[in-house]
Amino acid sequence: MKQPVRIAVTGAAGNISYSLLFKIASGELLGKDQPIILQLLEVEDSMERLKGVAMELEDCAFNLLHEISLHSNPNTAFAGAHYAFLIGAKPRGKGMERADLLMANAKIFSEQGKALNNYANPDIKALVVGNPANTNCLILSRNAPDINPNQFSAMTRLDHNRTTGLLANKLAINPEDIDGLCVWGNHSATMYPDIHNAIAYDSHDIIDLVDYAWYQEELIAKIQQRGAEIIQQRGLSSAASAAQAAIDQMRDWILGSDDRLVSMGVMSDGSYGIAEGIYYSFPVVCRFGRYEIIQDISINNFGTDMMKATENELLEEKQLIEHLLPKETEDNYKKVFVQDNDGSNLENFYYRANKI
Ligand code: NAD
Ligand code: LMR
Image 1: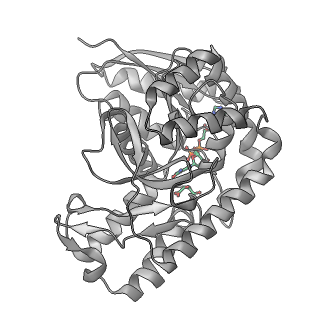
Image 2: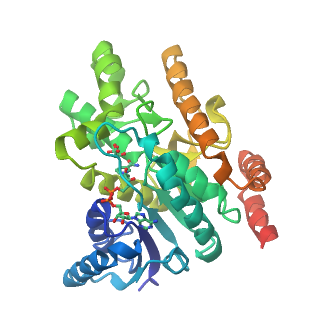
């Protein structure tokens, strides 16, 4: 029997967690042979609600669920954690943009970055779901200087799944028969869903199967506005689909994406000319617990403009929260990039060892 792993979830009494926790406990994340310990974090005012969720988890009698602990302090919630889902944050309401949450949520991620740095397992993988996810991820990572920036990622898998789902419906094929699409940039209204390199059934170019005007004028806008549309319809932001995307992104990251291309918000290393030091959604393949940005995607002029617009938005967001980014971490970042570009993970090990 494998040893249990520790999974921390913040915002554990919220809507997304109400779906996510049961998926994790049933083995959807790590498989049916991996026991888990859940370390759940909430704000003081929601601890009673959290107890109710813990009771329901217990009532499911999940074989894999070894232990549940409830926390209102991030230091204890992240203690020894191997994986963390950072969901706890305010969601937007009708008529808001995700960036409107920046100031309200930024403080949470700066505090939780410090807690991860000091108390989590050094090999932690942390997925940021709380909006605005990309910039929150940057704040989190910069406040955790002893953890490699590559161990953080922002959730853009929901946008990737949405694009796959809508395309599959349009073409009347199964989502699993589509590969090669990706979503670039910010999880916001500027994101760029790119289907130029997508294929169906391993051979057919999807761009030739759909009407280009439909793609450019309808599909892109639909994906960019899908979150807002759901809020309009439901009165609440997406929750079950967000939980599914969180499972998909983290599972692929940990166990591998089976050579399939997926989208992840990861620290830019300058690939495709995107500014270093922001969390930007790139096409990646995951293997052996690491993601690799795919380098040979061809981009047309339309794509270049779209990628630039979403990059500029992220740089503007970064400027707004610059005061929450500890200055001394910038040099550490550069060190990691140089080493990663060489493909040398050994150097990354020295990076961390030297810091300790
Ligand atoms: P929710 O309001 O139902 O739940 C959020 C929970 O977080 C609440 O229970 C709240 O008490 C808790 N919380 C707030 N501050 C906290 C803190 N400092 N520590 C721990 N817990 C804290 O919201 P939700 O629907 O679960 O959404 C959560 C976040 O995820 C929102 O910011 C939402 O916009 C975002 N989201 C992102 C994506 C994505 O694709 N990246 C998709 C859907 C939702
Ligand atoms: C989504 O894309 O559904 C989430 O980011 C929630 C939102 O505010 O749109």
